[in-house]
Image (cartoon, rainbow, N blue to C red; front, side):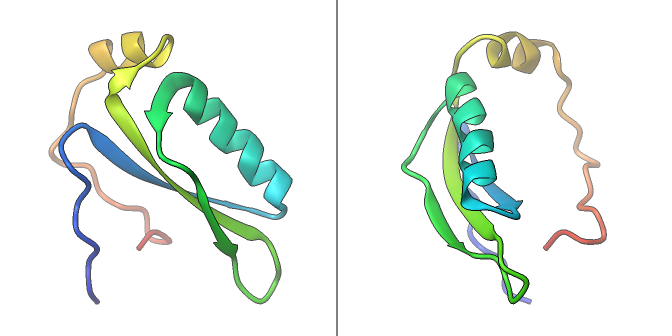
Length: 86
């Protein structure tokens, strides 16, 4: 399995999968209120329908409440992907 390159320092790649484009856009809007981000890119999410939306968040330019959450959260080196994540 090939891995995508990691985002640059201070950035996070986010993928939202939803049953409808509207739901995916609403989630992306909430994230944009907390972080600077790139323009979203959307794709079909499989044979069942749905939408997959990708965007890049700039965590170095966080707004409240994300800024206070990032300041108090601890980084864990042992974070593992869930079984259904790639």
